[in-house]
Structures are given as structure tokens and as C-alpha cells.
Length: 105
Length: 122
Image 1 (cartoon, each protein chain N blue to C red):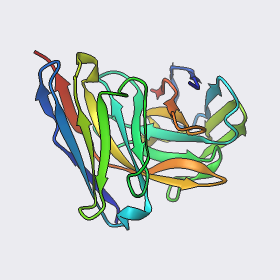
Image 2 (image 1 turned 30 degrees about the vertical axis):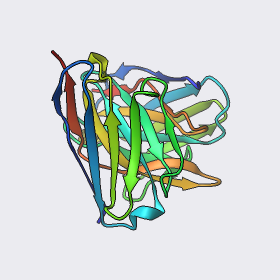
Image 3 (image 1 turned 90 degrees about the vertical axis):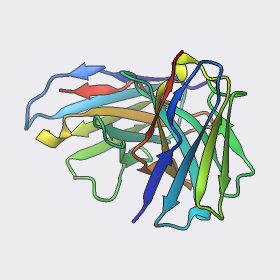
Image 4 (image 1 turned 180 degrees about the horizontal axis):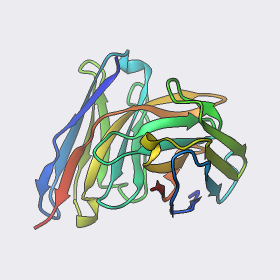
């Protein structure tokens, strides 16, 4: 199985900060990597797919990059509504795996 | 407007069974794969299973393989998750999601339901 190592597990930030979250795959997954935002009591929300494609309606302050084994989610100017948990998901093969998550607080 | 609504969650004893449903609306259901994901209390997201357009192929996480079974009824715009031999560690919110797939871009989950809570406890 492909393991996804996400870091950090949590981070403390302020409104206006630049935030970077990384995911590393245990083997190359090309660009088959998504990013999701999860808030308590709400359905998870797709932010980025295919490593760098912004989902419709997602603010442009979110961006994704990477390929192979190393991927990054960046929030250029953190807004109050961005305090949440973030997860990467690899969909390279038919056994998908999420990263452990990053809580932005 | 895409809408997904899960149902069927509840309290079940260890070793018991439960069947979850997910009703879809607002899109051509048979044009999409569908997926189940769960989140245990205080834990991260875990992919469980997906099913292809016609329901002829499925994939399962090792943690649920041989205990859970995914199915779909395109006439009813619904997917199901039959969960058998339930364990305490299966306690979680279970989400269904619409699964998009493109050859060059891979797979992603673009719409999610609000989830249904399954609690496995004696």
C-alpha cells in the first residue's frame, strides 16, 4: 500500500499568514493527489485535484504543487474561514490513502 | 445542484451488521463512480470503498475487505454499504462522495454528503 506522510500534524497561524502543508508519498504517484478541507460538523470540501488544479469556487489563495512523491498545499494569506483541518489523498492505484491530516489553528 | 444524503447509521453491537444508504440527486448518477469514506472520532479521514458506474467493479480498503460490501442501484440513484462483523474501531461518521475520474487527471471526490454516524458498542 502507498503510505502518505503529511506534515505538520498541526500548526498555529494568524490571519494573513502564508501556510504550507506537505505530503510525501512512499512511492511515486505521478500527480494523482487531492487536497481536502474538513471543518467540524461539515462535509469535507475538495480544494485541489491532480496536484495543482483548483476546484471550481475555491478561492485563489489556495494552491497546490508537486509531482512524484512530494506535494505541497499553500494558503497565501490565511483567512478566518480557513481555520480547519486539511488532508491529502492519493488516488494513484485502486487502494487510496489519506495523509494523517493537518490542523490549522 | 448536487445533493448526497446518507442514512442508516446508528448504534450496533460488536459483531452486528448495518446497511448504510446514500441517495443522490442533481446529476446523472450512472455517469459517476461513487465512494465511501469514514472519519472516526478524533481521527483522520479513511477511504473505505468505491464502485464503478455500473457496479461491476469495486475496490476496498484492507481494513474493511471481506466485511463490508458496496453496491449501487442506478434506477434509485443510490449506493449502499453493507457492513458485517462490525468492530468498535468501525465507529465513525460515514460519508458518501461523488467520484470523478479522468484518464490524465486521475480521481477526485468533488461532492460529499453530510455523513451518518455509526457507533459500534455493547
